[in-house]
Each structure stands twice: as C-alpha cells, then as structure tokens.
Amino acid sequence: MLITLFWTFLKIGILSFGGGFAMIPAIQHEVELQGWLTPEQFSEAVAISGMAPGPLATNCAIYIGKMTMGLPGAAAAVLGMVLPSIVLIAAVARFFYAIRTHRTVKTVFYGLRPVVAALVVVAALRFGFTYFRAEWWTWKTGVSAAIFLLALLGLTRYRMHPLSVILLSALVGVAIYG
Image (cartoon, rainbow, N blue to C red; front, side, top):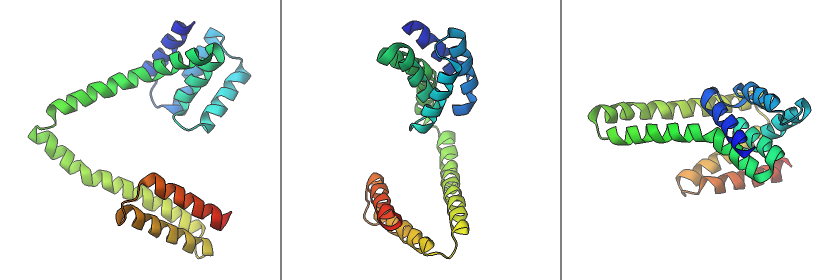
C-alpha cells in the first residue's frame, strides 16, 4: 500500500501542471480509482488542505496519505508528490551553476534583476492601491501607512529580521484594530 501511495503521487507529480487546484482533478481521479476516500472525505481533504499553510496539492497528498496509512502513508505520498519537482529543480540548478560564469548568462541575469525588482514593486503597488482605494481617508489608512513606514524603516535602517517585523506589525495591528 505504501508503494502504491508513493507511485500514485509520483505519477501525479510528474504529469500534472499548474499546481494547486489544477492538480485536484488528477488527485481525485486516483483517489477514487484506488478507493482510498469517499467523495465526502476527499472534499474534506481539499478543504482542510486549502486552509493549511503550503501548496494545496502537497497538503492533499499529506492528508490522503495520513488518512490511508498513517504517518508512513503521509511520508510516502508527499515524497511521491514533490520528488519530480526536486529532481527538476536540482537538474536546472546544476545546469545554471555550470554556466553561471558564461558572459551571456551573466548579462542575461544582470538584465533580469531590474525586471524582477519592478515586478515586486508593481505587485506591492497594486496591493497598496487596492487597499488604500477601499479605505481612503479613514483613520485606518493613516495607521496602516505608519505601520508600513515603520516596517520599512525597521527593515532598511535597522536591518531587522523580516519575521520580527511581521510579528511586531501583527501585534500592533491587533492592539490597534482588535
């Protein structure tokens, strides 16, 4: 049964593209084919997996593996699900490591740096504009802007660890809005 769990999720990991919700039909098909869970149990697995931190399909593999074979089943299912990605990433990393000093590769990556930075800034601006448009000119807007500026100052001037800034911001948010 452990080998079946491993091979089933390995097949899903190899053949499925798009991640998350795009993989759910493939997982459901295999779970029904094997008779591991009822449709109700599968719906519960997807709901719980969606609430847990981490990738949905990986969480589903863990949940289904645990439901069918306990902790060893969870390990077998998640190993099968993530192994194809690990192998692919390792191969790509090895390839890029081998060519990292090539002039063309250095030039391409040098050119990509500002684009990646721009994508991050655009995502942040879109998120910020959406929030501030919805909450424009309220006291919450001012508090949020102050939290943002203090977080920015903590990260850049005082070089605080990002997790510390997130936790402090959460505590301030609870204290003010809670």
